[in-house]
Each structure stands twice: as C-alpha cells, then as structure tokens.
Amino acid sequence: MKFVDEILLTVKAGDGGNGAVSFYHNYRNPKGGPDGGNGGNGGNSYFQGDEQLNSFFSLSSQKKIIASNGGNGQKQLKTGKNGENVYIKVPLGTIIKKAELLPRLESKELVLGEILFPQQKLLIAKGGKGGWGNAAFASSVNRSPYYAQKGAPGKEFQLKLELKILADVGLLGLPSTGKSTLINALTNTKVRTASFPFTTLHPQLGVLAYGKQKVTIADLPGIIEGAVHGKGLGLKFLRHVMCCSLIIYILDASQDHPEQNLEILEKELQDSGIIESQSKPKIIIWNKIDLLSSEGEKKIREEIIPELNKKKNLTQKHFFISALQKTNLDSLVQEICLTVKENKQINSAAPLHIHKIYDFTVPLDWQIIPLRSHYWKLTGSFIENLIQKYSQPEKLVQELKKTNLSEYLQQKNVKNNDIIIINNQEFFWRYE
Image 1 (tube, rainbow, N blue to C red):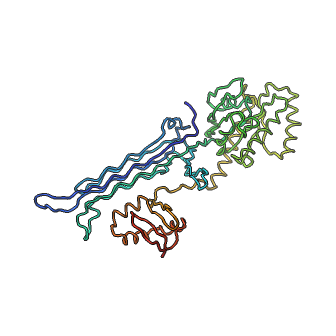
Image 2 (cartoon, rainbow, N blue to C red):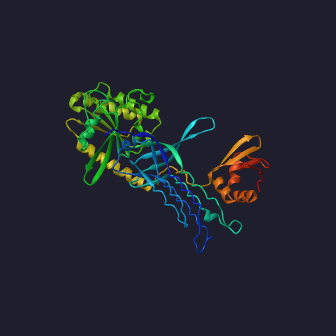
C-alpha cells in the first residue's frame, strides 16, 4: 500500500432543505391556514480517528467529500428529513489545516485541529439549517404568508491534511547505516534492505514487544548533508519524529570518521527547526561492529566518544551493535523500553497540547462589502433569513442590533452615519 502523508481535500456539509408553502383545506375546513413544514438540516462533516490506518492512501483518490442534504418540508407541517452526517476516517496523528488568504495575498495555514485518539471526532463543517415553512411565518398581521424560507447552504472548506506518525521511537541516520536492518531485527517487520542508498523512501513502522510493554518504532528515510536545502529526500518526513519519546542516531562504525556523521545529523535537525531535538532524550548506536576491528572499536570507545562528550557536553548513552548479526541487542532493547516508559510517565502528568479548534458552526454569517467611501452593502445568509422574516425595515434593523453585528462593523471601520444597503434599502447606521 502506498504511503501518503499529505493530501488536499475539499469537505462540504449538506445543504438545508427548503421550507414548504402549503395551505390546509378540506370540505369541512376550506381555509385551514398555512401548513407548510420546515426543511431538514443538512448533514455535518466530521473527521474521525481510526487506529487501523497509517496513511491517507484511502482518501488520495477522493477530491471532494459531501454530506447529504436535508429534505424539503412538506404539507401538513411535516419537517423534511435531516441529512446524514459523513465521517471521514483518518489515521491517528492527522493535522487538519485550512488555508487563509491574508490582505497582502499571503497564504497562511490555520491549524483547525488534530486527531490523536481512536474514535476521536472533529466537527469540521456544519450542515446548513433547514428553511422555515410558511406556517412559521404566520402571525396576527399576516395570517396567510405565501412564502417560505430556502435552506441554508452547508459549509465548504478546502483543507490540507498532514500526517504526524505517533511513534515512540524515531530512527535517524545517513543512508546505508543499517536503520532498516535494525528495525527488522527489533520488530516483526520486513522492511526492504539493500546495499545502495535510499532503499527506505518513506517511514516504516514496527512494534517492539518487551514483556507486556509495546514500543512503536519509526524508521525514517536517510538524511544527508544539505537535506534542509532539499538534497536527497530532504526533510519532509522529519515531522514524524515530533511526537517520539526517544530519538536514536544510527552511525556506521566501520567508516573512517563516523563521528562526522553524527555532526551532520545534529546540524540538519537543528537547521530544520521542525523539532526541538535538544529537548528529546537520545541514544547513539554504533552499528556494523562486525566489520570493525578491535583496534577500531577501542578507538571509538576511548578517544572519539570522550571527545564528543567533552566537546558537545553530551549525556547520551552509546551502544555498539551489529543489526545484521543481532549482536548486543538485548541491552539496547532494555534501554529503549525503559526510556520510553519513563518519558510517558513524565508526559502523562503534563497537560496534552491540542491546537485550538476553530468554530465554523456559528450561523451568524454575514459580509460587509465597501462600495465607496462611507457606503456599504450588507449580505449573507443570516441577513437573507431575517429579510424573509421581517418585511418592515425598522424591525429588521432592530433585530440586527440584537446580535453582535455592531462589533463586526466596528472591526470593518464602519462609522456612524455611514450608509448601509440591506436588500436594496438604504439605512444610516448608528451605534448605540
């Protein structure tokens, strides 16, 4: 199955059903009055966490997902059927973003929310409200209204979905250092390995079982010098270690100067700015000791490692292993599980950071359009609904002032005595 960790997706909620215009009459009661029912509400669009998914592959062929519309109202005061909600299944670790166009035409991505837990639901698009039937407009002044309200359209958004794998451990290293061989040795995965660089083209996951504890390990594609500037596979997969409790650097100990690779990795992480690498616990693995002479291992242990610790003030633990021959893996497994367990206990006491979820369900949607100096036009579905309900201009303005419209107009620099056009009628606006 292809790994897809970024997609663009348009999500639309269902439209509200229209209200009905109908009058009840029979031979006993020929003027029974209006009996048009209200329209049903449109279905909502939700994102829902599914722990069985690990990428957006199932959504990659879909460009737009639409919830069903509400049914129209009917005679005899029958309300239309509400539209069915749509639940979009996404993997845990999904970040949902919406692009906002700023005044200077700069695109800014707003994080709407994250899916972090199984079955977690996030309402992203509210269905349109059903329109009122003519029975709802009947009053002592107008006993036979010959009009009904149209249903409001459902909200529609173009979204960007990004996946941030929720792994416990992230494996980082240059190409051909043995990351895939190590994850195969530690877990039950069968990641492809070969003698050429970049055999891992996307993150691979494996589960390490140690007693009752299970640790999820992510093997990321190899990082080379200059990856932050787009060389190799770049750093586009690096966000997958943002949630890791532990970062493991894998070095090829059989090379002439393996410590230089450690400096490359740390520099690329620091320059990327994607994660705060200094705040995460780390383990340094010196792999391929089966290709290393006893003098070479002694040099690393007695010269290179002390020099690194002194130069960088490091406190990481070092392990000498052979992932291919599965040498010295037991002590490594114990250290990985212990570090992850301790980190989870620390983080469980801290409040979980979740992005603010923006509310797109507020029905008071309106827009003020500048026509010329001190001259504006007020539109929007909420305004249209009020126009249908209140035919008298004075009553319409009174109802508008009961809302937070004044705050909105102040933000848009509408001044006292500016002229506002509502439904082709002009008003002098005054703040109270």
